[in-house]
Picture 1 (tube, helix red, strand yellow):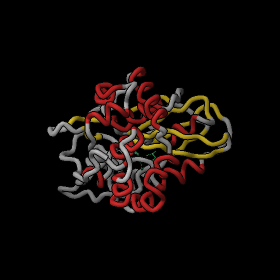
Picture 2 (cartoon, helix red, strand yellow):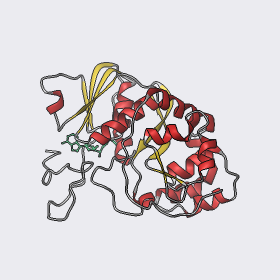
Picture 3 (cartoon, protein in one colour):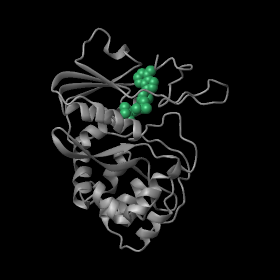
Length: 276
Ligand SMILES: C[S@@+](CC[C@H](N)C(=O)[O-])C[C@H]1O[C@@H](n2cnc3c(N)ncnc32)[C@H](O)[C@@H]1O
């Protein structure tokens, strides 16, 4: 590996993630060609390293990667799953279709002062099985604390967590016309909902979440998801839905001076107000 040295992210930057259809299709083609799947990434560093990544340590994964040649798959996993910088030439090899400039323009990468290329988002494969069969997507979210080496920003967009997969597993697999996903975040519930709905409206108070959800839908070739900015039912006032799915913020932030108002938590509400 050319760059598997834990450096952390030098500073916290959140470029806008943009969804140019040509660039997004090119990125998807490169991820596909590299074999960026859950199975292949797990096999890259092995079950033990994968388990220790879940516990928030990447030492075992780095050790496993150090023993391997640099392939597009190791580059993608190092950048987007481990959140570490890699050499420019490695990124160019990993994105032959989109090109480094295309991925930079999409807001997924940035170049560091030392010439290396840093991830600006987390991007990882996700696999699932539902009543329609097995499926897989690539999901962009914001880099976690491990990659950033610092506390999360107030605009942080969460990736897929335990509560996300619990809710996605509870979505009713019965075909309906319209579903509302309230508080869509990276868009994972909306993507699942769309498999059983003609149309999905996904809302969030975070513009960054909507940008990322839009990118994820495009990256995975999923249409029919309409994204709307706003709090609770404001963006859908007067409309009716056959089903509503929501994984609302459930970690309550104390409203005290000096404590940030995280959008992915309660967006500034007090106590249990949001869930209420
Ligand atoms: C726990 S995340 C869930 C994300 C995603 N739906 C999932 O299942 O992983 C909660 C989301 O709700 C959003 N949110 C917070 N307050 C909100 C509000 N008042 N109205 C709509 N969305 C809100 C946050 O920005 C965040 O994206």
